[in-house]
Structures are given as structure tokens and as C-alpha cells.
Image 1 (spheres, one colour):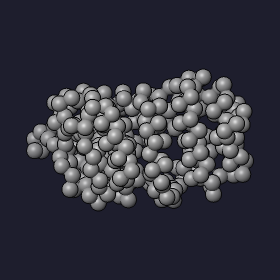
Image 2 (cartoon, one colour):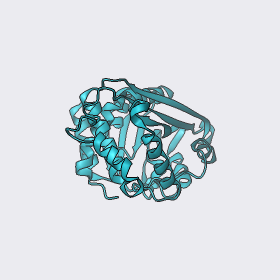
Image 3 (cartoon, one colour):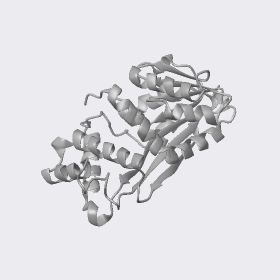
Image 4 (cartoon, helix red, strand yellow):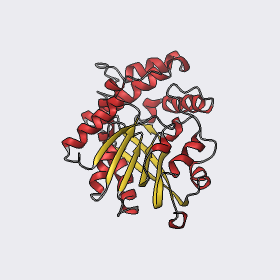
Length: 278
């Protein structure tokens, strides 16, 4: 599916700010693992939300935000400038995974929701691991728990069906955004890449009803993506339900329902390059 990053970029910024209570927990945990980090790589950085947070958590490091979309890197540069971080957050255009070997080594390599878009996830993990300095950490945000936002009586199994459709598309390499299943679990791929002290930790996003305006907008945009991406794989009934949930004025829209919440979780898998491997 073609993505217009000039349009999509601001939505990613808004999404990053809504999900910050979850992601910032993960980034704080990682920063505590490498307190003396001199360089951080954010691979597939998007508009730089995580890159700027990492720079704030690790004031002694430089952060390199790497992405293949110039429009997103422009947003990342502007975000860094707005936060007074331009001297430590820089951007670099690069095609992933082709240009991974050209990137500099780092003490922390953060890869959020990117590895499952690589044509060969196992090979990509090996190349990402090769960028980690001795004693450093590679962190992959992959998996967790699927989003839920409606009480069971209102959901009617819709989100379970969306999960199945997305899983089948990824398994058969037919996902509109190119998502594919990794050949083995992410912790196993980290070990196969030569990393040690492999760990996984899950972080929760729990925004109860009534949702704030920004959270409702984020949820509506997320569901519109579902409807657009999966239109040829969903029943007419499910497409119609998503239409109601994403309408501007429909009383059943997530913009207006009193019972809408936002519950999901993200899992971060990490591996360390042994100092002896340097």
C-alpha cells in the first residue's frame, strides 16, 4: 500500500504522544541498561518521537534517527529543534535493510515495529546486532497484546476477527504494509545473532473511559487504517461496523461513544553484545 508520509507523519506524531505512557516506560528501562551510552541508533525512527525521548533520558549521548522517508526525518529534525536537542539528535536517510551495514556502531539500537517489515527478518536482526558495540543492547519492539477499545457487548467479536485477518495476511506475506511473520521467535533470533542476556518485557497502555480528545482521534485514525488496508478481506458487515466507529458525526463513532477505552501492550525483546565479543 502506498503511504503518503507528508500526510501520515503528523498522525504518527500524534500516535506517539498518545502511546507515550507505554513507550516511555520501555525507553526508560532501556536507558537504565546503558546509562553511559555515547550513541543511540533509532532505526525506522519515523518523526523522531522516541529519538528525542532517548536523548532526554541519556543526556550524555548522541542519537541518530534513521529512516527512509525524508518527510518523517524533517519532522524528526523539527521536533529535536523544538526541544533544544538539535546538537544531539541528528537524522540520516537510509533504506532499510539495504543500508544497515553503512550505519555507525551504537551502545543502544532501538527498533520499534520495523523488524517484521524486513524481507528477511532473521537476516535483518543479524545486521542490526552487528551495529551494537560490546556491552551494548539491541532492542526490538515486536508483538505484545492487540488493541481493544470497546466493551464485549459493543465489540461483538469485531476486533478478534481483525486480528485473525491481519495474522493470516502476515503469515502469507500478503499484508498491505508488508508485515510478515518472523521465521522463529524474536528472542531466538537475537540469540542466533550472537547476542547474550536475552530478555523480553511487556509494557501496558491502559487509558480508561472516558478517553481524551487526542486519544479518540488516534483511535479513529487507527481504525480507519484497518478499514482501508483490509477492505478486500473483511465482510460487508465488519466494514460497515468500522464505518460507524470511524465516522465524524455518527453517535457510534469512537469520537463520541462514552464507553470507549484504549488498552494494549507492547513487548520489547533485548539482547546484549558481550564485552568479550569486542
